[in-house]
Amino acid sequence: MLALTLRSVRDLDIAEESTADAFLLAVQTWPDRGVPASVEAWLVTAARRRAIDRSRAARAARVALIRGGGGLRQVHPADVSTEIGVVGDEELRLVVLCCDPRIGEADRIALTLRLACGVPTAAIAAAFLVGEPALAARLTRAKKRLAAAGPALDLPDDATVDARLPVVRRVVHLAFTLGHTAGAGTGLTDDDLADRAQYLATALRVLRPADPEFTGLLALIVLTRARAGGRFDGAGDQVLLAEADRSRWDREMIRRGLLLTRAALAGSRTAPGPMALQAAIAAEHAIAPSLPGTNWRRVVDLYGALLSVEPSPTLALARCVAVGQLAGPAAGLRDLDEVIALGGLDRYPYAQAARASLLDALGRRAEARAGWAAAAARARTEAEREFFLARAG
Image (cartoon, rainbow, N blue to C red; front, side, top):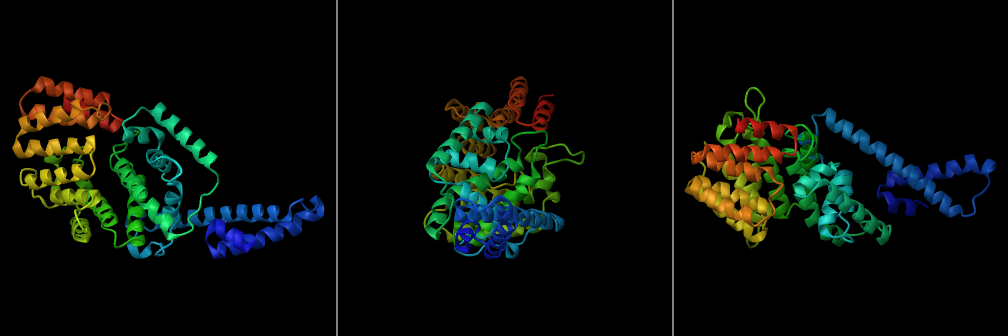
């Protein structure tokens, strides 16, 4: 009984207590209700139910403790309960379990974001650049395929964990992206989701400290959050990077992020991976004294290397913006129009926003106003819509 329960929860204390609970419940209920037809099945079911209840209570207490101590973003790597070789951290374990290889990668990512990270369906749809009904149907199909594949939700060894970690890394990165700039709702950000993603990135690095991509992921998150204070003006309104108050950036977080970035780039055996490259781009922005003082040649080159290992329309868009800073808005607009023509950005509001900004820099005000209005029509949140409409005005 103990072995069977331990296989379900992987926590010896909870397994022992839950097994004892099951036998106690049997003593209390069988005299009145009778001995069940299958004694083992009854005891296993009772023990597992008690284990689930205890695990949930322990997780709730842990979350309350973390929040009382300043929230997930304040968690130090030394406090993360991840054992080397085994996913001991419950937050991370749930993500790894949901990244089940028996369904396709895109479905795995969407399902894990919904079930393990609590991301709203509308926000996941925005991240995938598809409509909400289409994404909801995909989630339903993924759940059915996983149910049809059987109940083998387990992590028996390191090889199983390692096989899932690349997708886990993508999930955590996407979860942070949707926290840093919310994909649904009213606010510009979802700080709870961003905090959770930062915690998971910390746990991943503790789990696999020698992997430069996990180091790069954490570096990217730390550097991005270090600049969060400059995203808003004194009235709390969003501003463009050119208007950001860089004195409000967190210099200590930048220092930590730069150390992590150097470790990620140094740890790459051949060419740096996508997380290390994105961290390097974030590092260039973090050390720049101003927008014109940014090393845009380095940023453009890094985006070129990034697109060679991870082709993406949104990353291509970011490179176009950097080209506009390096070679002028006309060059950036030419590149951007080519990227938009390739497709895949129809639902992405920042494609139209980037175009409007470049048109504005060229003095084509009427076209820029139409571009900001087009961005507002595609906005995912009320805060985005208000910002785009304000720029149009």
